[in-house]
Amino acid sequence: GRTIRGTKKKERKQTPQGRDGRTIRGKKERKKTDNPREGREDGPLPSCREEFFWLSGHEGSHPTMRCRLLRSSCLLQRLHTRPQRPLSSKVVGSASEAVADVPAGATLLVGGFGLSGVPENLITALRDRACGGLTVVSSNVGTSERGLGLLFQTRQIAKVVSAYVGENDAFEQQFLNGEIEVELVPMGTLAERMRAAGAGIPAFFTKTGAGTWHHLGGMPQRYAPDGSRAVVQASEPKPSRAFAVPGGGGGETAEYVMEEALGGDFALVKAWKADTEGNLVYRKTARNHNPAIATAGRVTIAEVEEVVAAGELDPDEVHTPGIYVDRVVQGERMGVIERLTLADDPSTSTFSPRTKPADALRERIVKRAALELRDGDYVNLGIGMPTLISDYVPGGVSVTLQAENGMLGAGPFPLRGAEDCDLINAGKQTVTALPGASFFSADTSFAMIRGGHCDVTVLGTMEVAANGDMANYLIPGKLVKGMGGAMDLVSSGSKVIVTMEHTDRKGNPKVLPRCTLPLTGQRVVSLIITEKAVFEVKPDGAGLLLAEVGEGETVESVRAATAADFDVSDALRPMRQ
Figure 1 (cartoon, rainbow, N blue to C red):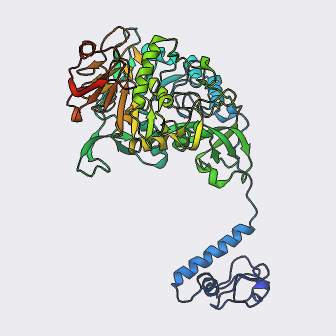
Figure 2 (figure 1 turned 90 degrees about the vertical axis):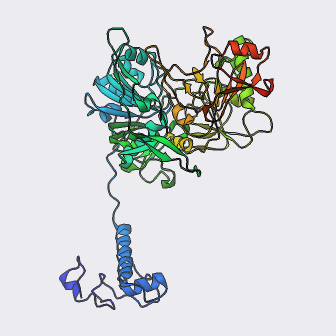
Figure 3 (figure 1 turned 120 degrees about the horizontal axis):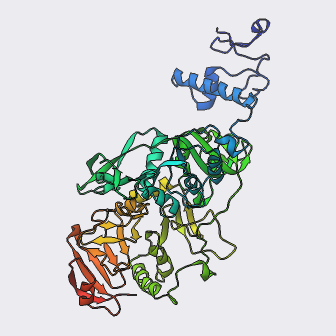
């Protein structure tokens, strides 16, 4: 007998009642029909029993379910007839307006990989505001002239949290001169820390970096400003714990490092398109770290190339839902390509084995490494020499290249005119996408890696030890590159192949009894390939086995150039090509 709110007193007496005795909203008597939805525009809503009977096709269901169904039905009808709410006010007029409230000392999370997917217009607006003392969290720090390099030019950055910093000379000098504090973090760990912040997860455990300075502490974070390059601040040890290895099956355990979530005051991301509700769509590998970063800022500002009205984006194609985004600003498309590499223009590549003797030796190394790939393998190729391997995969062997910046199915370099600034590999070179390729975020990419879904990883290194340790990212006080994704890759359980020149530029051995530089991983290398030899690393780091010798080399010449001791295989043979 309840009266539904919203009817006038004069109308209540004329309002029909449902079978359960409740007064139903509406003015005209509904024509009886077997379907209670018929005539709804001209008649009242059906009773609970009628509605449920029509939806389920039978009587006798629980009364609570019947009431829920009716309430949902009534709500949907109101929503469909309610006027659409006004458009969101998330779109702002300029990049300067978008960052107007960023204060000095703020923590900024900044998207991008190399110069792809970088919010350049927002960074420029921050430079013009001259707010200093910033803490910047980003997978990389741009170059001296582009990306975050603009803020290093004006010395607005006080602290950097990053994975790879090797392309920015201005940053490197400020760090070595004691002007800024730096926290180097494995790229996959960095992506997951930001994703965790956006998901409300305070901490997690990962195998990445276990046993290295990243785990045990001692990583230089600040040098003395007097030019001595003495370390005045180093990283603290991180908590760790032994866990059973997921999917191990044999009761194997390993040490896992605890990592805390990493959020920020402001998140600056770059997307391709946005609507007025803040929904974002990214393009190809320009997606990279942007989706995770978009979730992790207290205020998220999206720079986009195109803004459309709400409803024009296909909801099924939205990558970042508008709930994460606070401001949207349309900015000029920069179209910057950091390393233009074209298949039909040799001048765009510095690799020339026909004219450079050093490159001829490198070609020998990558040709041999390509023979380790098997049909159907998923392969990650590190930057530098390993990226060349894709050109030497044997005929009849089909592999899928995984790029840590968010791509499966990377193809050859493009022809001139077909290059795309939003389609690059982990070495920032322009590439193409093979049929069946896919794009995804960097945090998803490293989930593939950590989860053991890549079969083979090929990396360069500065040192490798007889037990399979490797070091490839830092010379304290001299060279600061950052580990990038290498720590994630070598801890993934995939087959790790090291490709490198046998000695450094001074002729010093790089295959050592023990690494002298900070480790990238402990006992992670399976195979070492140089121009002089191929070494297999024995199980459990028990030493090296010389399996092949290079052209013009002997066991004795290899021993003379190798600091580590090794055994010689009974099946020793010339290096395969």
